[in-house]
Length: 92
Image (cartoon, rainbow, N blue to C red; front, side, top):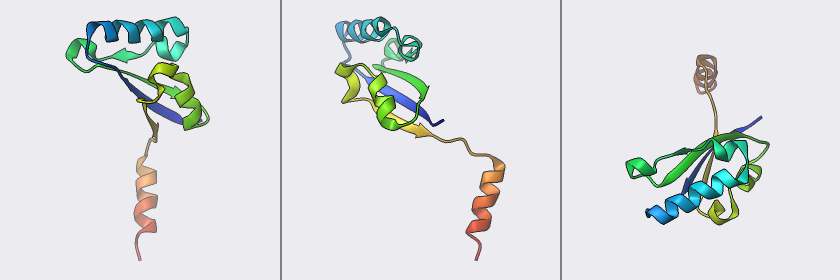
């Protein structure tokens, strides 16, 4: 199943931080309640990874007020075998 990294920014104010954190925690979603936050280090964002079928499905996990600004990236893990195969396919 595809895996996605999701970054959700919010404004750099105490009120915005509190609102974002409370919104995530109130959803009850395992993904959102276990998000990592950068607020205490000046990065006003939440991050989490999720395994779902599509990027659209990943976006729908983000609370509606934050969906528009969320960045969603599909993750891929590469192995040495993958690299060897790629090298062979590019040799003429």
